[in-house]
Image 1 (tube, rainbow, N blue to C red):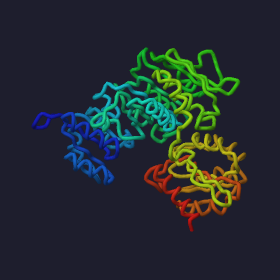
Image 2: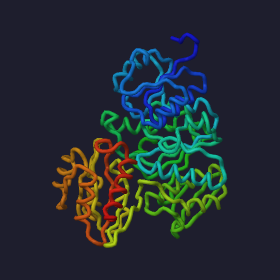
Image 3: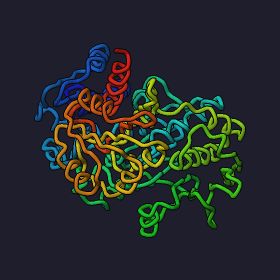
Length: 456
């Protein structure tokens, strides 16, 4: 049903970065836009919506008005089982993501990155390579300004986009020119009926609509990815990367510890010692980024220089400080699943006090148990409900496991537990929403608390 001036009705659900961007793009493209958020819209986005003259509500939904929409752009944080979403689907109202909506208004080249771990680092690396080479690129998805806002007000000929499974769920016609799939380990299972295959299927939506001229980059040694590729097919050209060379491997490490990249567009090599990021997981991230750079025909020297001077990503194995008594504090707040914590522990070179906890997403801590036994001296559980962590590690290790329910309590406990020459690692395995507004909020408050601890 059209409104009185025959403009199409766009409803945007969620007033965060993606929702506000979608609303602005909809306004610019002539839609009658209404934004609705069941919670409180952050002040900066509410101010933007007012300045743009976009009608919005917060603290609840006007259901009847929303059900009259011609199109709904949904925040990825809203589950498909939410009553309002169920009602919209029963009325056959199209529901799409902000990325899908933005993609309808641009013909820019899309480099899209997904995976359970390493997305932000790899996305940032590729973007850094492009910018270092002088290419006008946009950074979007889970980082940077929303794709919709950039398409509306700051367009670029190429975008580097980090995509979660939740964003991919409501993408249909959107197409990646280069798709990067890093790995798949259990995550967000609470959103997928606790069925791993549902989560795998969501990740593989990154391949939809790809053509022979497009490229699919993936980690060849990931068993879940390999199993899924035996079940499905893609028209895209494939470029697997791995630690060791196999017949069709496009990126690997040779016997002299050089990263080797081979594509029909460009090939290169680079000593692993020259990479800015260290650790096996970061080596994979660097290979995926270098493959993307070569396929985009970026000068090899630009790729090498960008990979050697990359400064890293906030909240991902971020050094906070080393105290006068030689206790190292590391912020890995972005580790919101077990596999991400595994990689963090794998890179630890000193005995470690590990902070775990938050909103559990169906975690199985068995994966990190060998590394915990090998490297961890104490576990500090930080969350509203730590029962699962206390029970698992209390039953499977001889380590002290402390129960804390605030950031300050956890940091104070870590200071008492960490001996000189040890590391305190915040790598929670869990989402942040029990005590914090986001993993960024958790990481920044952790850094502030640690610095305050040593300024007293």
